[in-house]
Amino acid sequence: MKIQSVDCLGLFGKSPKGGWSNEIQPDDSIHALVVVRTDEGHVGIGSVFTDARLVEAALAVLRPLLIGESIEPMRVSEKLHQNTFWMGRGGSLTHAISGIDFALWDIFGQVCGQPIGRLLGGTYRTRVKAYASILMEMPDLMRERTAFYRNEGFRAIKIGWGPFGRVSNKLDEEIIRAAREGCGDECLLMVDAGASDAYWAQGLNWAVNTAEMLKDVDVHWFEEALVPDAIDDFKALRERSPVPIATGECLTRRQSYLPWFEKRALDIVQPDVTKVGGISEQIQIARMANAFGIRYIGHGWNTAVGLAADLQLASAIPTADLVEYIGGSPYIDEITVGGWSLDADGMIAIPDKPGLGITLDRDALREVTRNSDAVLG
Image 1: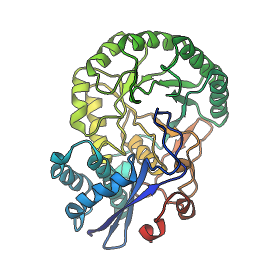
Image 2 (image 1 turned 90 degrees about the vertical axis):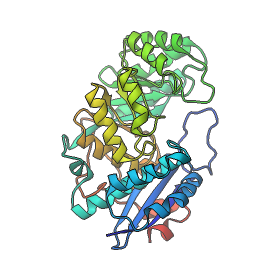
Image 3 (image 1 turned 180 degrees about the vertical axis):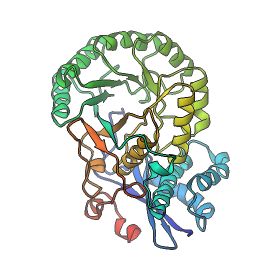
Image 4 (image 1 turned 120 degrees about the horizontal axis):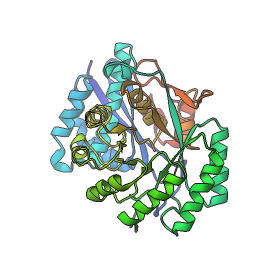
């Protein structure tokens, strides 16, 4: 069985509000699906957290290395990395390889008749707690939104970006306390400062003081409290913070994570499978984190296809007890047949069908893509 084609489906028109300073326009694409076909008719799907125009350009570079290859995800993805790193390891090429990689895993699972998690070495769980990932709002609306998702069945909620760290310390605390009131004492509450936003103004002292405030509201972790490259400040923050420190969504490939593990600069590592290099890379990062005693919780602000990959990884990683679920995103809720549902414990069942275990909803895809019929056939 050989790879016959690889194509891109940009998602347009329903991108959820992201919270960053230069907010996307309705026609922008910040997510794309990757579709890989074989000469025997198998189709695999991947997801990339990158503008579709960049994915299209990356695929033009990668196709000559890919077409005619066997369905061997780790070897083929490493071949793509090894032959393109000098063009810019970690950028659009790496992001596109991410989507290709788990499309290959999807096909591999279909051919083997097994879910990806089992092919990664075995499964530790059949369901996992989902945390609703929502933007911060002013206090009254924040209280209302966290209460809404609590009533929807979520037992863990992460709030991020918005006005937090951008107006005043007083407002920051009011937002967090309102969120806790809305979700209740029994719900896990996580806070994401979103310091990868353009021109983030806060530094180490702000982060340390804010962490102290978050402790009083029983926050489960403090995410992206500093600009993404500030490894030494992250180390200092972790040593002084009374709440666990999480980061890692802006890094790509396993080599980038090793210095963070060696310096003990974080408590929780959050690679994004749609950017980091795919499932092949993510599983290696998770296992390396485990060797350092660092908790792995994948970042998941992407699509239903990315969520499906996160679920398969969560099944295969013993300490991965949470997955991120964007609240209110059509790219999560609408593009797969059957969608997703929570059980009474706020858990999502991990698909046990072959590959990613999901089926795309063709009608829903037509509303958010421009060429889905041509690509999917």
